[in-house]
Structure formats: C-alpha cells, structure tokens
Length: 375
Image 1 (tube, rainbow, N blue to C red):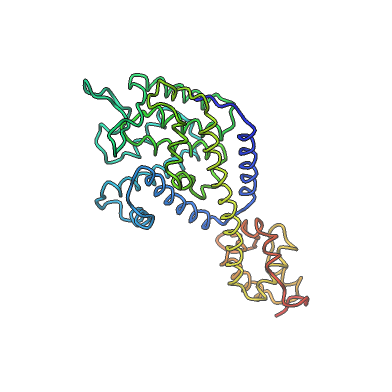
Image 2: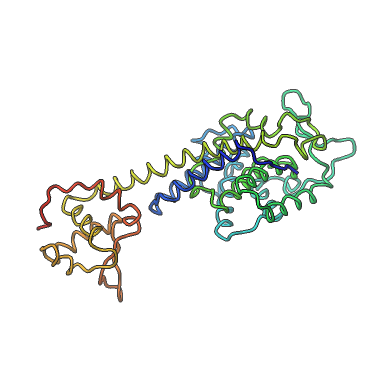
C-alpha cells in the first residue's frame, strides 16, 4: 500500500488548490450555464481518458458519438467513449447520494467502463491458463511492462484500499492520488483499470468538495503528456508488483505529479468559471433596454425581499403598467422571478442569479443619466 509523507512541496500544492477551490465556490453561475459546462467537461474527460488508452477518435468524433442515438450500433472505440460518459453520469448521481467508497462502487464503475464487452472482461480477473502470465505488455516489443499481483490477492488488496479511504484522516487530495495509484497498480480487472482509476479518483475529489462544480476535465491534463503520466505512476520501479510497486520507496514522485495536474486543472477552472460568469451577466444585460437596466439597478439597491409593481411604480413615479412591462423583460432574462398565488402573479423578487452577481451587474450598468426613472 502506498504511504504518503507530507513534504513542503506537497503542502504547497494543497494550499494552492484550496485557494482555487475557494475562488470557484464564490462564483455563482446560472443553472443552464453550469449544466452546459458540466456536459462539455464530461465529453472532454471521455475523450482524454480514452485517448490515454489509445482510443483513435478525435474530440469532434467523441462529441458526435455521445450525442448520437444510443440505440444505434457502435464500434468499439465509440462504445468506449460512450461508456466513460455514462460512468461519469453514474458517479455524478452517487456524489449527490453521498455514496461511500466501496468494493461494489469499484466493480460498478468498471462494469460501466466495459459495457458491451465479453463477460470475461467484466469483474475481477481470475486465474490464467497454466503457463500463461497475466501482464501488461509493450505493444512494440512484446515484453511485459508490468506484472500485477496474483488474482488471489486482489480481493484483500481492494478491501485494504476501501478501509483506507473510509478511515484515513489524510487530506482528500492525497486520498484521491492514492486511489488512482492503487487501482492502476492492483490492476484488478482484465481491462478498464486505468479508466476506472481515473473515474474513481475523480469521485474522491468530487465527494470531498474538490470537483470544482463538475467543470473542466482533469483527465485532459493527464493526457497532455501520456509518457509523463505513465512514468510518474511507475516511479522507475521494476515491472513486478511484489518488487516495490506494492510499497514504493518514493511515493511523492506520483503524488507531486498528481497534485501538479490538479493545480493546473483548478487554475483553468477558475478562469473558465469567472469568465463564464462575466459573459453570462454581460450577455443577459445586452437584452435589456436602458429603462429596464435602470429599473434593475433600482430594485437591486432598494429591495432585498419581494415587491409589487404598484409599490415600485409609486416610488419612481411611473404607471403600474409600465413597471409590469419592464418586469416581464427582467423575468424573461433571468433577473427577476414572479411569485404566484392561485396561479396569479401577486409580487416579484430578484432571482438568485441577480443576487449572486449583484456587484457585477452594478458595475456593468451605467445609467444614461442621474435622472429618476420615468416613462
């Protein structure tokens, strides 16, 4: 089992990632924007994680495959990216349910990854035929790159990993790195080990609040330099699991790499979240005319709770009908919400979108003049 000792470098990475976590948590995006970004991020992850395994599809092809009718026939590379996307959806639901890390969760994720494969490919690997060595072979030379533990040891190794995850007081970022390494190294399945490891280390991040709202793809950063990714996991150790991979002498090689990728990923998410928020506010405001913007600014400054058109009209000296018309535009563009009583609008309130982006809205609205609102 990999045992991580905190170094100054590791602590520095954790501190910087935590800062980014706070930055992202302070950015509030409309639900429609968040949903769109999450779906695009899952597509990117499906592309990148399978690219690491040699999947030949381009990012554009992956996008098309995921959007295609699921009843159609898929070639193996297409099925692989769809499977990963489905596994991400599955884990997204498990995060909402706060599902504990377990052997069942590991097996369920691998089942998604290998959907459509033969029964032998799904579930824990078993005994090999006499005289046949189970190993990960170099496709060019035919030599073994890695000889994982015996199949009989797999259940106990997975139990040890599950117990560690559910009992450790290690920082969640360290736990995610350990889960990634252990699943790749234990290599419990005939196929799908790398993808399952990336999915479940991501799950550990998500369930502990380091998923950055599901925006962005950590897998993309692993895929930028696949050789560095594999070299970091292997840590220069011999090919046999029992000769050092089971308890690597310098686990910080992998942990430093993993945290560096998470930091790069989180830096990008900060930029993406903040720019998306700015763009969304700017885009929504572009649909408002001058008087509607002035009304919005007035409501932000004046009302923290609900309000009626008649009381607003009295305060600013315009007709009730004028306020209702302007409010309908604010509602349409997500700045205000009507409150219904017996299916009739009785009052309004500012939307969560407006409240969350109040400072940005104030900054972007420049009143045409300092005059009071009028007709």
